[in-house]
Amino acid sequence: MDRPGRPKSSERLRKEDCAALVIRDLPILLRRSGGETITSVDVDGVIAGTRPFRIQLQVRRTKQGWRCLCPSCNRRAMVIYFPPDSVEPACRVCLRLVYECQYDKLPAWASVMHAITEDLRRRHQLSSLTESKPSLS
Figure 1 (cartoon, rainbow, N blue to C red):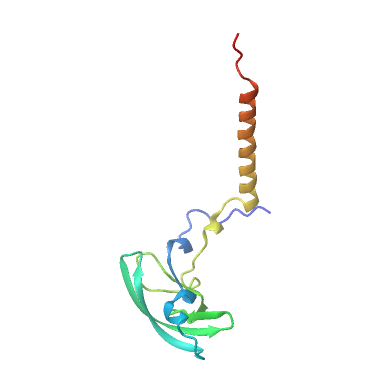
Figure 2 (spheres, rainbow, N blue to C red):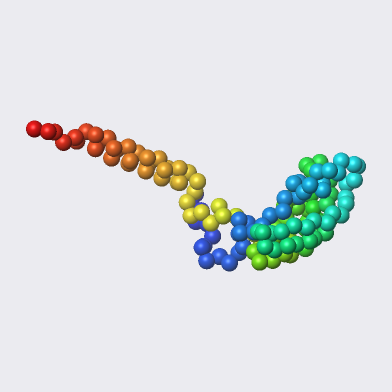
């Protein structure tokens, strides 16, 4: 089935264009091993080396590990994103993020077939060069 993907003119923000704060990697949570299930943590840092931020996150320990509540919608999230030129974080649902792969025009198997075809074409060109060596007479 041919899926054409979204048009290149789509105005939606891509996940790859945002700075990501992965909750499980926060050092303050790595040190907490007590029985707390819900807690509030202050997180500060710098985005892309130029934009300082300071936010307070509500975090919750689940069976799968730490999750935070999105500051905008209170949805549980593993990653909080910062849009370009902003220090206001939100989850992927609030920001309506899309992924780069959603814009691919070709299915994954088509790019593999293209690479194989190019490789065969190069091999054929090399073999035809070695077969037609000029003879010295």
